[in-house]
Length: 257
Image 1 (cartoon, one colour):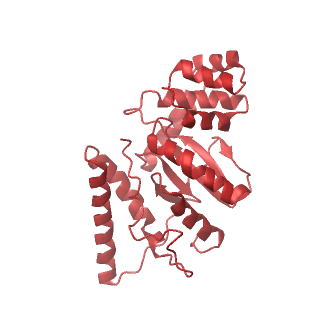
Image 2 (spheres, one colour):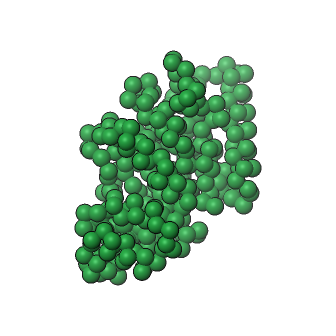
Image 3 (cartoon, helix red, strand yellow):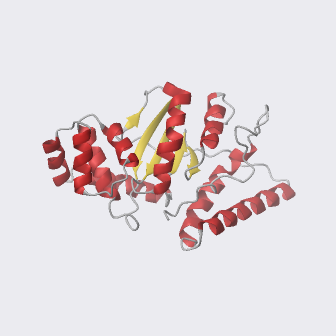
């Protein structure tokens, strides 16, 4: 388990695309910062508990906090946007895309694999050049022994202009990650395997990967995948409908800046 809470980063009442009313409320967005913070704390404190207990516990906490504020008549908090830099990480999509999704991810994380194989293709098909994705490495060193080496391999492929093809291959392969697997994928993508091997031997991008990890840790991230949609935090491999809800509201100017 990747200290991951697939459905817990938003309040339980967040509408999906199929249940949203024509006049959508922004109220749930005010809980994104609280959900983000609680997700970080809960993933650390309750790491050893079953996933279902973690999800239910966070939902109860969020519901209680919302009820308490409503009872006191408190005004909702302003929507919080995190100023997360693009750094010099790989970007898929045009620079002028109105929606930027920054993802902190781990190639051995099953939830990250699920998102990349099931949700991201739908976002690309639906929104095209309106969305760009920035991939920032967050290898969970204590859980995944090969996460950093996989990130190294992807960056080495990027030297030859095939970062995203290699990214897709890593998330699609059923082979166990190893040096042989990385070189096999490089050959399948028609990379210069000799240059790829040299890049891997030199661990050329290790400092970059570790810098991404350090930045994310200081920001408070402790689980993968974690996303920032135009600065709005979204934790976990949320379903397509959740991403669509946020993206559509951003495109329509319905979320305060």
